[in-house]
Image (cartoon, rainbow, N blue to C red; front, side, top):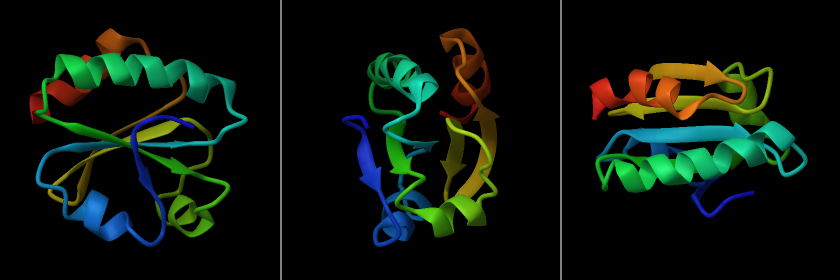
Length: 107
């Protein structure tokens, strides 16, 4: 998938729910073309945000329990967690401006 922090069932609580900074988690899959298109956008935003947020990815094929727990029905679905709580969710390929608009108030 990507070079983001890899999240799975074994590290979800530590990486996502206990993250010190806002964490944007992409639920995706290696076969998902929109996911592959979204990842460079998220990479650029991560650099732009200069360490104020982290970005992680989760493979829905390998983490069915978490995918069901968060009711992810399409990929990519991206969820912003702040202090372990879901704050923003969007599905599908998004433009950078829309992502900024929704995420930056929490940074």
